[in-house]
Length: 361
Length: 253
Image 1 (cartoon, rainbow over the protein chains, first blue to last red):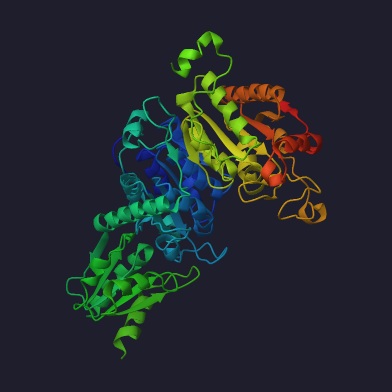
Image 2 (tube, chains in turn cyan, green):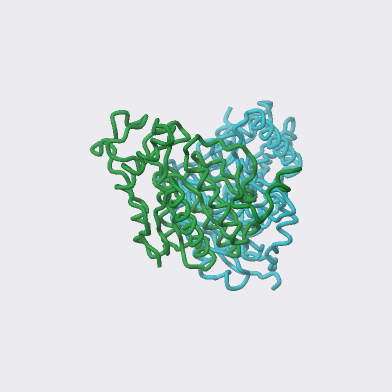
């Protein structure tokens, strides 16, 4: 089947895109505000059409380990959850990174800490890009700001995960997950055949033929010298990803005197802020990181000398702002504006914050 | 003249399974793991499933099971092997999938994964080594440690008023609709080894016949953890473990 244009929620787009991008398996556990991912997949019954396995696990811990199992056999597998559930997955995520397994994780963020709230938030930025689990590892982190990107990043996430043998994560939030928009769904891609998997994932545990050594998928290495070697290999891979996979979008930045940096739903709101500011004669631009890791540091640093100030606008207490400051090495004043605990800012609030922080003095 | 020239096929009465490689085992003398490993290798080989078998190794002494049996392996996080096996089998239904877990892995940290995989009736084999102690970390109390048994974290003996009771998790698993075989075996003498091998074979066959989850518990020794000679450990197991964990089928349908 070819492309299709539909109106749907972001969560539904994730589910439908997964089937169309040839996912082999989805393993999840219900949690608001992302339960529609599992619900849509169950309603669609892809096991009858593409052969995709969909399973409701007993916990987020089990779900991420099912992902670990599926990925170990070279299959395209994914899970989705929301903040408290993603905290539970951190053990598995560290193991996935340590065993260099490709997979896709979706976090439709809600306000925290703890059980927090079910309203949208971006407070899991640190967890996503600075670790979350134990050890020196990185996740390829994609931040969608539309329902279209929810669908597109399923394909992109799998592509990058397999290209680099590394887990990828879609970091969305309750707004993107719940809002309905027009979306162009991709045409159906067939699932990988056993032969294709054998060719593309020679490391996968698929049963050992006499023709090769046994494959062992593990993150364990007791010899510290070898473990250091493994870590050096990971770091080389991360450097390669940093060099090749940075993605971002600029909006009215050419003549900007002030710059907003925002991702996901915040970036959608900030588009309006830019328009409102320009209507008042204030030359404002917006840089939207699409990959949160690798972070578009070089792109942001180019505004040193051009802009008088940068405002990092996030639905949290100030997380990405640290990376923005590092990007410009404090050569430009960088401030943060956010709302917390599930409250979403209005364009007026953001513009007022910009004026308060940069134009009052 | 080489060994194979001396030992003619007609004279051969016993051979190491081909799937057991020559890596020196890290297991202590008297430990049950080595024998159970050998039985798995024999059964997989005799079934002709060498190229279709995927093992999931645990965290615990058997974490390095993948070093000894020449099949594809996945090393699990502590307790999570049944969840991993679930996905491996569902995504690869033609493969033969088993987990190999100790008592801490299966009956403490992985209780939820164990019970739910079994309750879903996943077509996998769960091999459960119950030696009533944490061997790998140096002899701490396990969920299956017997009442009064001394370990490094219950140095005055397991006190049920503090630590609760030893957990008969196989009895629990036998209650679940999803299990088709739950059996308790041991490998301390040749008769027990022969019996255990039959149980293992049945378990693996069940998994390929889509009968549901098979659990083979091995009541085992940990001579080092129990601070006994291998010989004494076997005797102690028979006298103390078997009365509480009686051998035999708890369920076989």
